[in-house]
Structure formats: C-alpha cells, structure tokens
Amino acid sequence: MNPVAVALDIGGTKIAAATVTADGVLGVRKRCPTPAGAGPEAILAVAAELVDEVARERDVVGVGVGSAGVIDPDTGSVVSATDALTGWAGTDLRGGLGRLLGRPVTVTNDVHTHALGEYRRGAARGRSTVLFVAVGTGVGASLLLEGRVHHGFRAVAGHAGHVPVPAAAGRLCPCGAEGHVEAVASGPALLEEYRERSGAWDLGLAEFVEASERGDPVAEAVLAEGGRALGEALAGVANVVAPEVVVVGGGVAESGERWWSALREGTERGLVPALRGLTPVPSDLGADAALLGAGHMAWREHG
Ligand SMILES: [Zn+2]
Image 1 (cartoon, rainbow, N blue to C red):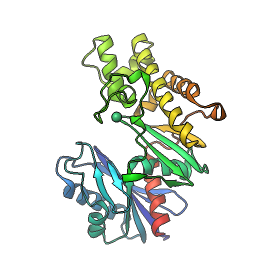
Image 2: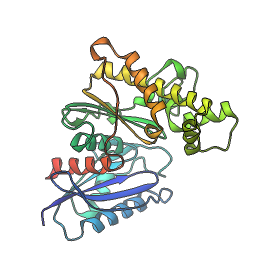
Image 3: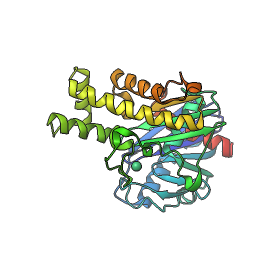
Image 4: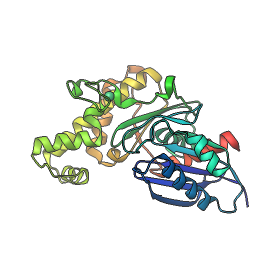
C-alpha cells in the first residue's frame, strides 16, 4: 500500500485523527473526547493511541498536528492556551508526541491547519495569499503567504478577533483589552447580547440561531450587528495584507443568510476601493479541513 501521513486535530472537546494520502485524500478516521482536565500527558497519550489506530500497518511518512493554543512552530511547544485544556501551555507537543510515536511530528495551531486544508482542497484552493477566519467560541484567523502559514513574532499572527471596531467600544474582550471585535462577534458574545436584550437568560446558542431563523427581530438584529462588526474588522485586516480570498468558517458562520449578508456588507464598507468586491466566502470543507491541512503539512515537511 502507498505511504500515508497521519493528521491529528487536538481541540478542547475532541481529538480526531485520520490518514491522508499524498493527493490530499482522507482515509481511515477515528475520534474521541479530549481528556481536557487530566493534563497534557493524558492528552498526548490519547492522541498517540489514535495515531496508532488509524496508521495500523501503513507506512507513515510523518504526523501533522493542529492543536488548540498558540504554538511555536520552531520548538513545537504550546506558547499559550485557554483554560479549556488544563496545563496545556508549556507542553512540548512535538517532542512529547515524537517520543510516544517514534515518528517525525510537525505541529501548528488548529486555525492554521484549517486554513491549510482550505488551501489544499477547499475554498482557497490555488490562491497564494489567503485570509482564513474561524468564528466560534472566539474569533481566530490564519494568514497564508504563498501557501505557507505566516506565524509572525512569537507565533501570534492571526489574532483577528483583537482588531478594534466602533461597535465594541467599551466592551471587555477575553484578552483583557476593551473594544476588540471578538467582544461583539464571537458565539458567546452574540448569545450574551441576545439574552440581555430579550431577557431569555437560559437560552443556548442553537436556540438563539433558531429564533433568528423564525424571524425573531431581536435575534436578527444581534446577528446582523455581530456580522457587520466582524466584516469591518476583516476589511481592516484585508486592507493591510491584500488576500486573494477571505474564507470564513466556524460555528457562527453556520448561522444563516442574515449573518452572512451583514458580514459582506460590513466588509464591503470597510475595504479600500482597490479591493472592493473581495467578498468573504464560506469554508468548503468544514471539520475535514483541519485534518487535511495537518496532513498536507506532514507531507510537505516529511514526505
Ligand atoms: Zn481582545
């Protein structure tokens, strides 16, 4: 059988693994819950087990990993992470997995692997400069230059949620600053705003999206304001880096046409004339993108 790369996607709630061919086709897949509270060694052990399960007797060129947190691409360790994964910051991801697996390992952040997947086979296919944005619990992004991740100083590039926008003035962002777009455009921010305006304190995100689909004017207004604010922030980033394509994925990007039209409107309003018409497009591959991107990275580094 032909050799494969193995892709790993390590998130706060689940870990997924898959084989990826040189042509970028996903094969055998497995997933399991992340032992998020059990510490990094437990997480690495589960991840290594999944790799062995999907790889079985195959000839494996290398392992590509997309993980939650800011990852230093040179050392392969976790620079910082949210509390979702206990003790994750400081973990030697590449070294730890490499020792458990006895195979070459390449790691980066999971938004970057998602972007690479869209570049390999999805909505950003064949585009040399790509801005990928993931909107869910937070707002993260990845910038690809000539098909490669731009990690930037301290590997911090891509924090598109922390661009100031007028709609977020005075709002506290999870990063500690005030006025960043994440404070009005992330899933939790949208939900909180809806709860405040409607008084429906026990509502979840799915019910909030349902309410907007039913034509609930408060839900529609909150989604539109969040989408528009994000569009303005993306336009600001796009004006600086001039991407050929802006791809938007993540849970909030599935909240329907009302949100998308506001996003497009906000973007169009903020772009410089030379970039007008650079409309954000949805991610093509969904959850597969992160695995495809991690596999692509492993092939490029070790194939
Ligand atoms: Zn912030």
